[in-house]
Image 1: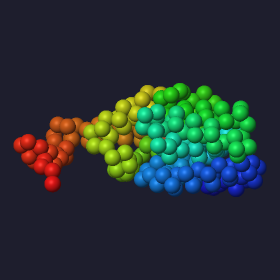
Image 2: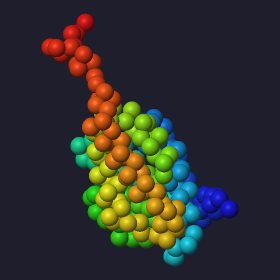
Image 3: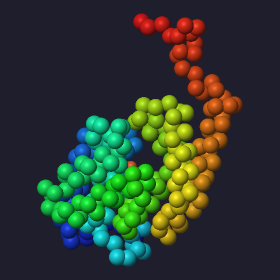
Length: 225
Ligand SMILES: [Fe+2]
Ligand SMILES: [Fe+2]
């Protein structure tokens, strides 16, 4: 059966307040990939993973998943990183929604650790969020999502491939933390890494025509009109 939010909201109504505020902010930012739909996929996976973990604090896990990419809704996330920017924003959003200091710090840790750059996941909730989010990239579907990310970040194919290959390699070396996470991955993360590497070889060595821009069609650079 699909895990749902109803019982969790009934038990802790603050979850609904975070949900509403997160939905408003993600919709306002209107990003192509890092949006509320991505968050819902992560939340589904997190609840699925959590079903066989014990004891999970859902008052920490659910807000953490809801806010894990909220950093993308801040103006300065590129400089700071969306993980740190998101943890900072969550620190501002949660106290008015009746979250205590200890809870805010537990949720902030989950958000900071979801990329594994700023810090590694220590708590069970942080490990579940990490796995749920990495699993978004552990499927051939992510090759299609890649196009949306290139558009969202307004970046070149090479920049995208270099970053994603680097991140997939690190995630594979680190490994997933939960049994369910490992099962859902089923070797797909490695498959995605191998395909991205093949695309990188194609673009850099075999088919440089894919990298051609307007500038390449003019001796002294493209004229401006
Ligand atoms: Fe993220
Ligand atoms: Fe994410």
